[in-house]
Length: 313
Image (tube, rainbow, N blue to C red; front, side, top):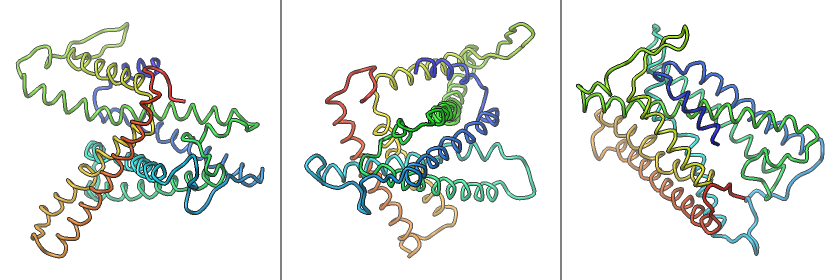
């Protein structure tokens, strides 16, 4: 984790989102790589070894060690994890700004790309979830790849883990760069005469010359350092993702787009279309609240055995 943080400190000095094209392509390839490895290993476990975990169409069975309330909480938290994977609205505008000019409007190109990416992501996630559950049943691990420790071809699992690390390196920057831009733009407007914030200095490293802004460098290093320390101190990966997904899904993916659609198309209040959109928004809000509750329950449960800077068993 320390090494990951150090690497991100260097990568965070990439000037802006438009310079991340190569990194985002590599991250996408890595994502497909480890996902299909997980799918392939699940199929191998089911077909070749004739092994199926104990499972049912209703999911994990309720018993002495797993109550109905536990199942409900885990369902809510799992939905939050899915919401986190579907939340890319915060980088949507930045992605659209990087589109090359063409005869077709940027909004149409972005709409096609969003439909294609969302449908592809949904298909792959459904395959991972369904095949993983068939292979492992009620004992399916939180991280699918950790369940293949008894496979002969362990190098495939190791390769998938390498893909995950590379993917996370790129994904970190894709989500962090908009945060950097917002803070830096605000600082430029707040202190327009500050040399520390607005002055770029030329730095030479051998024959390589680059412009360096002291504020951007220090702020980005500080952000990555604090985020890395928090991540190491709080080893709640799945539940933390579920909480983040629940908090950002409704406002960014549902509420603001719906309200902008209503304002742009001048949909009158009280009409059937307006009521349908409000019903959709309120339904998603209730789902987000349930996801947040499930994530908080998981975090509260994990805190009983919590030790700072130690991975969760």
